[in-house]
Image (cartoon, rainbow, N blue to C red):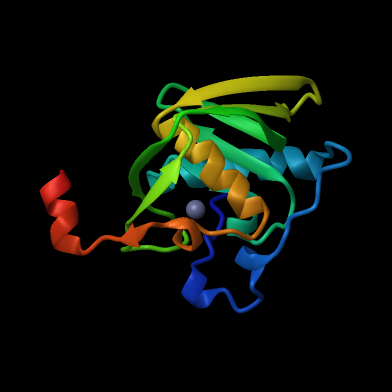
Amino acid sequence: MALLNIIETEKDVSKALRKKSRAVEEITPRIITLLDDMTETLKASGGVGLAAPQVGVLRRVVVVDDGEKVIELINPEIISAEGEEEDIEACLSIPGKWGLVKRPLTVTVRAKDRTGKDVTHTGTGLIARCFCHEIDHLNGVLYTDKATRMLKPEELEMKE
Ligand SMILES: [Zn+2]
């Protein structure tokens, strides 16, 4: 496994973070390696989720750490969403910034796992938020596009 470089918006010369990623047609050894490397990179970063365009790979691949395990999502799609919650959001590609974003409270995602099997995952709160945030990355959308407002550092300290 290898640690991958996470692209930050200010250094994104190829605009990878603003492009739409392509679906994975076939789960090749390169896709398996990408999943392994993304998981290692996510764990090292301390983040909750990572999407392939954040490491410069324009494929529809996401990893989410739910606190117990890393969920691997290939070609993920939101198949149901319920409720709404506004909460603080951040992004590994936009370091040092936080914003308030409205997201569904509960989200169910359908995807393929690394064996090519169809799987569904339901997340609530932070995990639902993360599913939405990472799938947005696959469409070139950043949370700052959706934030009702960005937070000042002193507001963040008050929330903690
Ligand atoms: Zn992000």
